[in-house]
Length: 265
Image 1 (cartoon, rainbow, N blue to C red):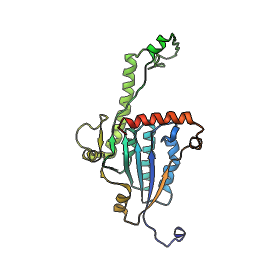
Image 2 (spheres, helix red, strand yellow; image 1 turned 60 degrees about the horizontal axis):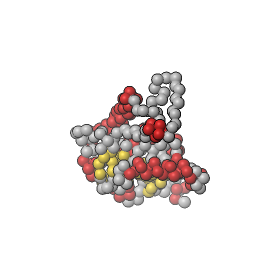
Image 3 (tube, helix red, strand yellow; image 1 turned 180 degrees about the horizontal axis):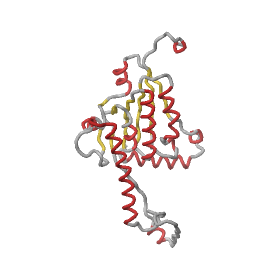
Image 4 (cartoon, one colour; image 1 turned 120 degrees about the vertical axis):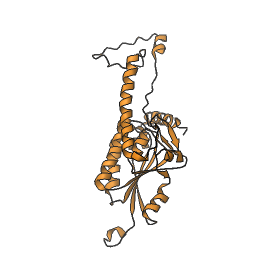
């Protein structure tokens, strides 16, 4: 009832955006992507005129493009609404997860959070010997010399690997530029962009985070004890929630576990 009385003062409001999971264009298993998060992010910045937006992050990364799109949307709305953004890392904000974290004005971590992995990775399998052993003949016809680049059923070609590394380097440089733009003079001297990760306070020492701190106590420290929290998060697709896509869900879970496992989680 209080919110309908215009002259009655209320405490500061912090919109909390929970961002958890792998970042991918296809929203299997509730993966984070710009299309799915857009209405949630927009609501967090616009509803109730928040005094700040807090990102609660737990992501091992994923798609560079989706990471960039999500981070860009957060920055655009933060600038438009003149609302400060705080990121709070739980288990991990690595690779694309850190790309999103860097969109915040301040990044706070747990003493055990894993942060960083500023790099680009591509992994796959080669099935050349397997199909030859089983008498399978691969037939590929292309218009364009690069159309079958890195075909897993053909022998790996040095020129294809070089081309892939060139593509990765371009994405890596964009990632580095984003982190430097957002963290600026906070970054320590030395090469922080090798894909290495840091734990808790060590990430503060190199300037990738601002300190060890948790959502509620930190926001009370900034806005006072009367601060109120409004929580927003992306909902899983209704069919996924009722199990009608069990195979896709299972595959998504395997992929997600593999990404988290890289950081011992």
